Picture 1: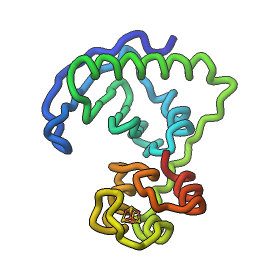
Picture 2: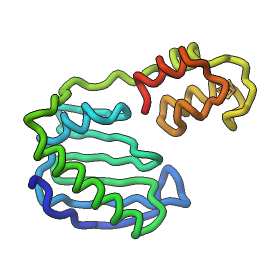
Picture 3: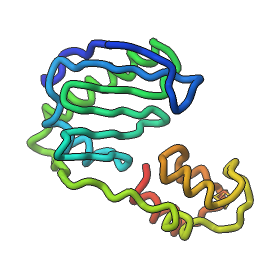
Picture 4: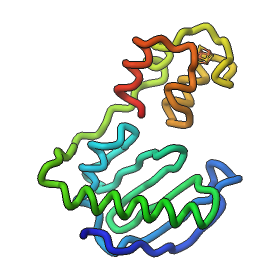
Length: 167
Ligand code: SF4
């Protein structure tokens, strides 16, 4: 087992979404060795090998890991925070136990630019996604604030191509 426990250091209002919360926590172990495996699993991952840091999105929740720190943003309450920490601890330990069969990914993922996302959208500005335009949707997808299937008008080609970059 790599990660035995996680201690919550503090909880505050989330700056990005003020009806949600953000927390800083400390893991019982340095997590640097697990980051390339998480980078391989999460398409949303932003991995910096030099800094030993990784950020990824799970649902609407944003996780940032650096050494023994796990920071979590956009959770609803303490109950959800503890559920998320349990999930993260189990995930890390499962990966650690299976690491000889897994392939780590050390390269940083390339985030698809807004204009490239836009080029794959229908371009009709129909508003069915809740945004005023396809460009606005592309900008939010680039920031991982929405999901690919948030555009109901997207054809299979666009869906498959965007699916390579986004979960
Ligand atoms: S639903 Fe799709 S096509 Fe319509 S505005 Fe949003 S991104 Fe554009």
